[in-house]
Image (cartoon, rainbow, N blue to C red; front, side, top):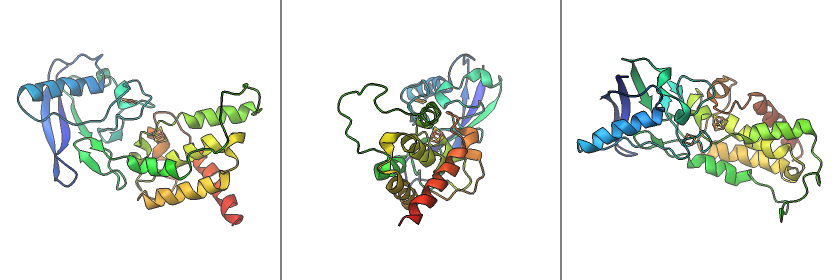
Length: 247
Ligand code: SF4
Ligand code: FES
């Protein structure tokens, strides 16, 4: 495949940025999107140009690092897929593909396609933990958990912290991420001691980090590569109301 990519180039956090067009020739339809950028970067390096900076790590959909907006959609055109698991066969020969970083006030650009997502760490630090002593692994049935709750907690725990939900939200809100973390812990018996303080503190950290509020636009769940459902935001709001009423 021969394609053109228009990539956001920005040399540093305070530099101005712009879209730069590159020709990429002879790409296999079976290459991943990141492999296509690797090939482009090899050409840039051989020509003495600055390669495109982008985040990546596992390249198998589990670390959440590969944040890119492709043709205006966080993680690109394939549903429930991270950028590293998106393949070039989703595009056509001759396509022009726009590639940009996450755009959100709480995720400032560091360079090119790399953004600073440490705001997510601040939300986790505020309450994404339990204080129950863990020790060695207990018997699986030592603390019975209803199957329905275990399944829902597991579903919430699949959030990989990629930030696509924030990038897609017109308000730059992190509610789906925060809701997933709160549900993941709050559905389990071990997560009950901090259930009230967790929701209050994590929402405060979210506001302090500069994320916007949720207006139920629903864009977040549409782009979430792990299918985290919007209903978890409803669950968060319910937890928050109960926690506040006890103060
Ligand atoms: S909720 Fe989905 S989109 Fe948001 S950080 Fe988690 S995995 Fe990524
Ligand atoms: S590189 Fe880890 S999820 Fe894409």
